[in-house]
Picture 1 (tube, rainbow, N blue to C red):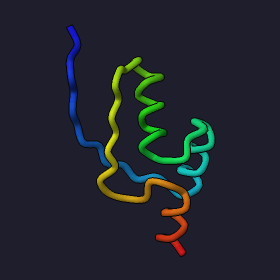
Picture 2 (picture 1 turned 120 degrees about the vertical axis):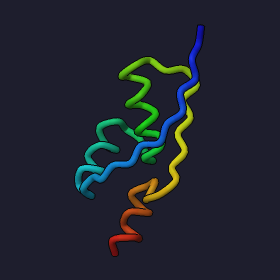
Picture 3 (picture 1 turned 90 degrees about the horizontal axis):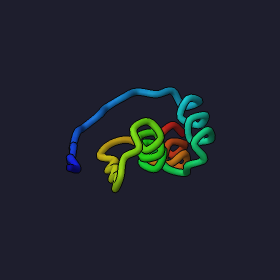
Picture 4 (picture 1 turned 60 degrees about the horizontal axis):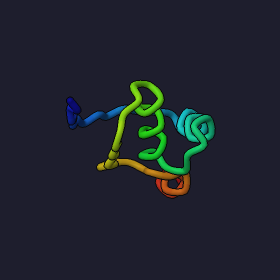
Length: 66
């Protein structure tokens, strides 16, 4: 039997940590990176990640920090 789990997670990461993590997972967005992390950690199916706050790309991060 499949189980659907919905949760909200908030975390703080340094700019360099964000860049390193996106590069390590070869993702262009934070939502894509989180999807990859979950999939590799617990082999999820049909992962949907919705970013509700904060930059989703390094370009958006640069715009906020610049």
